[in-house]
Length: 314
Image 1 (cartoon, rainbow, N blue to C red):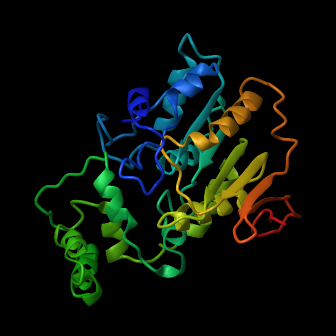
Image 2 (image 1 turned 30 degrees about the vertical axis):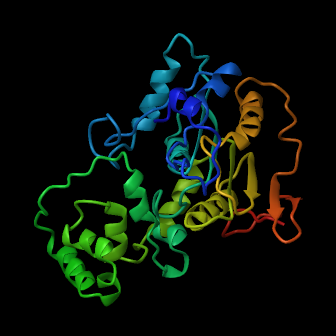
Image 3 (image 1 turned 120 degrees about the vertical axis):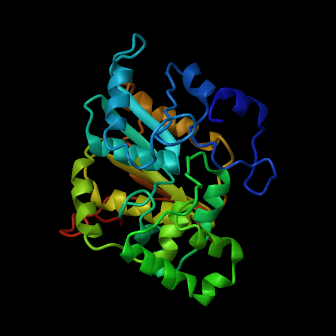
C-alpha cells in the first residue's frame, strides 16, 4: 500500500474526498528516488507480512538501519521519513542510537509520553475520543481475534468495571471491544479500561528525551481527531530534546496522500544532513507556524533554556 504503484493511481486528495486513504504515510517513493535517494519501507513486527507481535521490536529499528548500511547502494548515511505512525517510529529509532541515522523528519509526531499512543498527548485533559477505533478500520497490524482468554485478576476487574459504565453501553461497537477483552482494537481497549497515565511515565519520557540527540524536523497541523496526539507530541519533543531542530505548525487541513506538500522541505532537510548540500534550511527561523484568523505565516525562535522543559518557544 505504501509503494509507488499506489501513489501512481491515487490523484492528490483532500481529507474530505472519498479517495482519501489515511494510512498512506511513508512518502512518495518516486520523488525521493528522482532526487538521488533509496527509499526503504520497513514493516514492523506484527504488521502487514511481518511475523511476530507489534510492540515487541525494541532493537528492530537499529537492526534495520544496520542492514541498510551493509547494502551496496548505501553511503552509510540514513534519514527517516513519514507521518503519524511513521513519525512515531522515527523517535523510537533515534532513541536506539544507530550512528548511521543522521537525521529524522517526524511530521505529525506521535506521543512524547508513554509510547507512540501515550495517554497524556492522545487524550489531553483525560477526555477519551474514538480515533483509535477508526485506526483499526485501516489497520495492517495483526490481531489475534480469537476467543477471549482468561485475564489477570487486576485487568479482569478493570474490564468488569468498564462493562458497567453506561457511557460505554451507549455505543455498541465500543462496548463490544470490552466484551472481547483485548482481542481487537487494542489501543481503544486499553484506553477504555484504564483511562489514565501509568505511574512513572513522565520520568521514562525524560530518559527518552536524553537519548534523542540527532537533528530532527517535527510539526503538525491544527486538525481534527489527531491534532491532540500530533500537535502536543511535536511540542513536547521540540521543547525537551536538545540539538539541531525545527518546528512547523500548519492550519486545520489534513494532508492529502502521500503528503506531497512537504516533500520539498523534506528533500532540503536531507540534502543538508545526508548530502552536505548547503540548502540554507538551518539559516532560516527554527519555528514557523500558520496563524489562523490572521491567515499568514509567522516565525519564532528558540528561547532561553528552562530547567524543567529544556527550552521554550518565544
